[in-house]
Length: 99
Image (cartoon, rainbow, N blue to C red; front, side, top):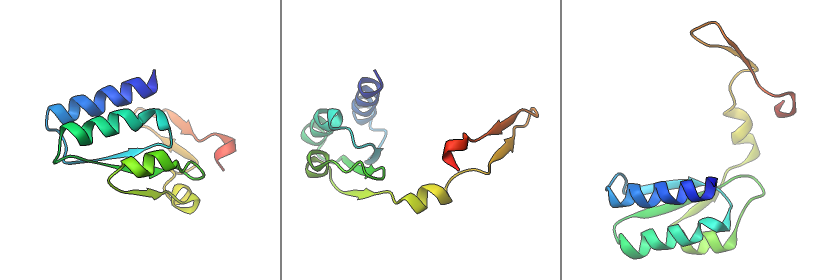
């Protein structure tokens, strides 16, 4: 249901005039119809796509009002430290597979 929830939120946010330009981070072509719907029904709204590494999707790139691919280095540079301690003292650790 994640795609449905994303699509619903995008349409509702467009209707409520919550954005001028939305950035969607996805490579899932199931989201082409809501993007097209936003562009068709809200002429002043733009949906821009940021593709995760190796997730470029031509059908999404064609319907979007712009796109880019997030590089692996940018993802690595944007990660939190390996261990973070919350305000309550709880330790959060990244999965070993992310290192």
